[in-house]
Length: 174
Image (cartoon, rainbow, N blue to C red; front, side, top):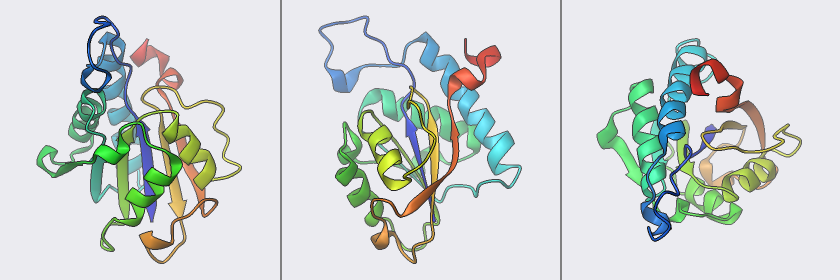
């Protein structure tokens, strides 16, 4: 089983009166999300390093939904199959674990799109010892579990299978 946590791409703060839930991606986010999707497709899914996702679940916040839609398009995941879950909006580690535990048995790889600090905290809690110095916007952390079911996912039960972020590809995301 594989759970990939992807933090939303960089969002706009241009309108200080705008509700946090409704903030869109900014220009940098709109450049980074397709690059990260292309890297996932080319270097991980097409290369066989990671299995293609069976499920994509996103926070209901606009910036997370938009990031999910862009990356799903790059990896060939149908937009109509993206699920929204308000629990992934500003989640705690426990929220992320509970959401993972609800995944159907037939899902071998799920991608969650959401927010910090919850996603960074969850990556470090689920995959202790992972070298994740920071979890920047549009970062991707794939966590492999050897558990027999999603219900068995718990703190310390995974290992980091991949960690990447936009500044690793500055020629594409600057």
